[in-house]
Every structure is written in structure tokens, then in C-alpha cells.
Amino acid sequence: MKAVIQRVINASVTVNNKITGKIDSGLLVYLGVAADDTKKDADWLAEKIPNLRIMNDKEGIMNLSLKETSGNIDTSGILIVSQFTLLADARKGRRPSWNNAAPPEKAKELYEYFIIKIKEQGVHCETGEFQAMMKVNYTNDGPVTILLDTRD
Image 1 (cartoon, rainbow, N blue to C red):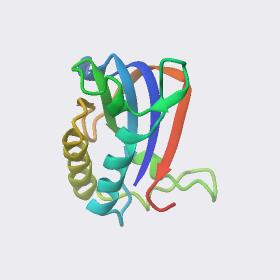
Image 2 (tube, rainbow, N blue to C red):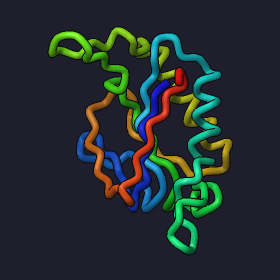
Image 3 (cartoon, rainbow, N blue to C red):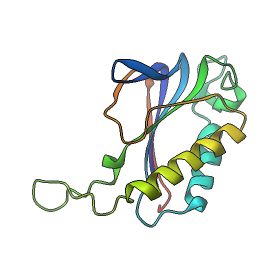
Image 4 (cartoon, rainbow, N blue to C red):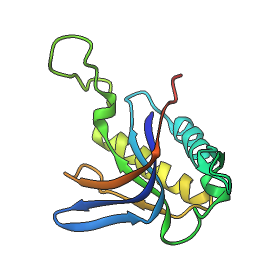
């Protein structure tokens, strides 16, 4: 599983001109599911992400996790967006290959499982819509962007 985590001041995702998820602050997470990923990968990411110490403390130092800040308030938290393109292999040629991406049925199952596990962490969670064309709007804070891969 791959995740791109961005600390944001605000973020929203829109499908067919309707907002499906919105947070005022917190973390925007793009999640890609590989063909050989399992629930163990989702468990690891769901525990890791809300506990990453990338939120500012009173002195403006990245010393707190989302769970230690306002990640449990209804207007802040984590916005999760499925993104199979994170699994692109562009090493050869000019057209990326997505052969490593999980088939949609498996990807959806693990995406939904990941959302459940994030919510079990006690963090407010909003989402995009699986397999939909989405428009994501956000203001990156910092900017802070972290890449996680369960294979690393």
C-alpha cells in the first residue's frame, strides 16, 4: 500500500459537483492499493498515519500527532482519497503501467477496511468516492508531504 500524506489547512473532494468529504484542517491522504496488499498493510498505515508527529506544537515545531491535536473534532481530521495511480510504474517507456495496482474489488475492500481502521483510532474521517472522477481542493500547510509505502 502506498500513501501520500499532506498536512492541510483545509481540504475537500467533489464528485459530480457534490462535496463528498471535507475537513477544515488535518491530513489529506491519497491511498493506493497494490495487488499483493493485505489487511496487515492497511492496519500498519491506519496506525501510523494518525500518530505521525507532523503537527505543530505551541512553538511551531512538528512535535504532535493529529490524534494529539484536533483530529477528533468534527471539522478537522483525515480526508482519504483512493488513488490507484500511486501504483504507476513509469520506469520504461512513456506510458505508465498500472499492473501492480489491485483489481477494483480488492482495492475497494482494503480502502474501506482502511477507513474503518482510521475511525477506530478515534479520528474524524471524511472520504472521496471509490472509482469516481474526483476534484480535490486543498491548501497544503508547511508544505508538509510524507510518502509511505508498506513495502519499505
